[in-house]
Length: 195
Length: 212
Image (cartoon, rainbow over all chains, first blue to last red; front, side, top):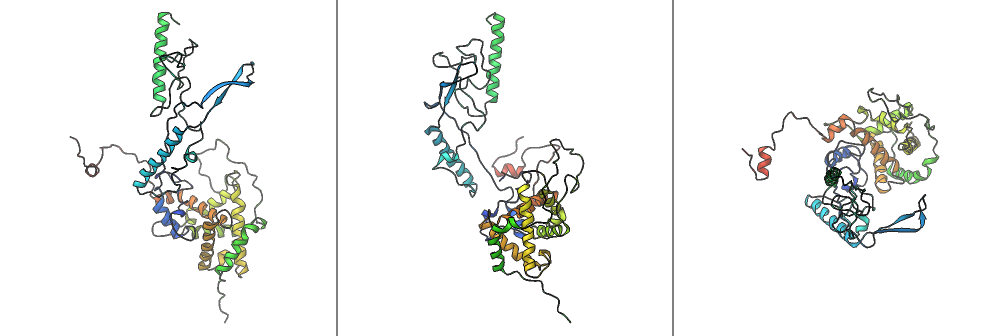
């Protein structure tokens, strides 16, 4: 299924049989009628959400696994919380109501009662940020206002790691802005002889 | 004076009975010309400039009889009407042959499925005294397709698998040609030398007025 009136592909005129009550699949005159009627009339909506930190998401040192230098490896723990599942149930309901008000029929019904069926596997979506939160207090954050880690003074995180969580929109421009800001600051520090 | 032979009729019950048995026996039918595909593909950097003729990228499979049957099936599935021509007139017959002759894994399951399904159609026609499916009367060809269409809807992974796939491939081949694309009403991006904003009608529809 392709959203909208995109350039026809192999699937452009198939997959319409469920829209009719015929005994058999369409062929012949009916196929041409279906193709003209239903091509381009499909629409899908996806949603992204924000996962606040929860107590089941953390990393610790693995008691057994070590890297090639004998240093314990990081062991990651991760779990959806009710926050995410409730967001997904709400998203499904909201997207469904938009489509319904457009007069849509659902090929796949919204998963309002079972958000676990709708939510994508953790790590599957893009725009992942966070992990080394920026803050003013070195006991409560990993990096400072200049994206520099508190514990390693010559380590600057110029990617999305300093984010506290997913932002409202795509993070690239904000990542650029923070990286630029960190670079400017680094240049100033160089001039002052602090680096 | 001898009466001209009537085209044998395939009655509905026979057709349905056949199709119920088809899913079990389909794989045991010997198929003409269904040797394994040994051609190499066109690689990861094909020359996109030439216009390739059917059979130029890899050898085709259909015999003359299979080609004729493919034409009949193409046009049963997509006939001509006042707005657009039938599938065989835009080359879907060649498309099917190229598809089932392709050396790529994506098309491989369709090779035997289509060839065996087509042979089964001929077998049924021969049981009724015809030389093949193509020599059945058109009403009988259509009636057989209607039964297959019912199976395709009720049992798409079993008895209906052949006709569903055939229908989808013919439709895919047709609606990706310039003729088929036009029939769907696809427009795509259109170059415009200038753009003067929304029309007055569009603005009025939203309760707005043009500026200036």
